[in-house]
Amino acid sequence: MSERGDHDDVPAPGPTDSANSRSLVPALAAALAAGIVGGILWGLIVRWTGYEVGIVAWAIGFVVGTVAVTVSAGARGHRLVAIAVAGALLGILLGKYLSFAFAVQQDAQEVGLSVGVLSSEMFRFFRENLDEVFGLFDVLWIGFAVYTAWKLTRIEELEPTASPPSAP
Image (cartoon, rainbow, N blue to C red; front, side, top):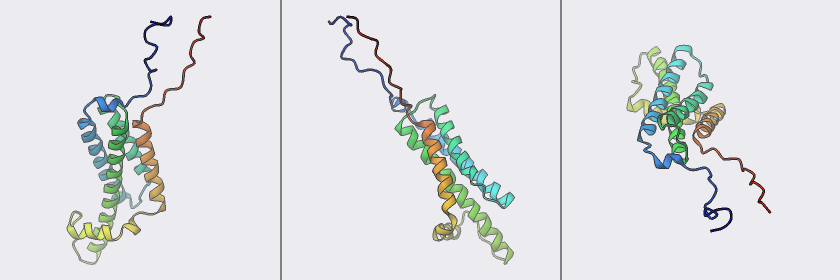
């Protein structure tokens, strides 16, 4: 045993992946649900207003990240980051799909056609027009959403603490 105690070889505490030690199933379910609800709301906002408000994508990332951390009792870590980012991306994709589908459905109705929002034709048409659905500003808002979801769920780096001076 040394003068400083018998714990000299124990590493200093550092950031841990607290999400590894807990079940993440509730956080996964909550993050996906938040993303889906956010995507549906975004699609409806576009339908009702006629405007695609990009900041809603950012809000989806914020809500999904917050929900994931809250449901996991404050856990953070790489797996929770993946869950939050996936939930945010799912919500954004759903919102963009619904915005597109509602617009196509309205245009089709004006010429006397009927296309279901969840029809296979609508899914195919969406996939075929991704280059028109996602623009440069969408990439910006998606980046904000992903960054926010990541920031809320990542492991906080601990600032290094100064060691007390050793006694002579």
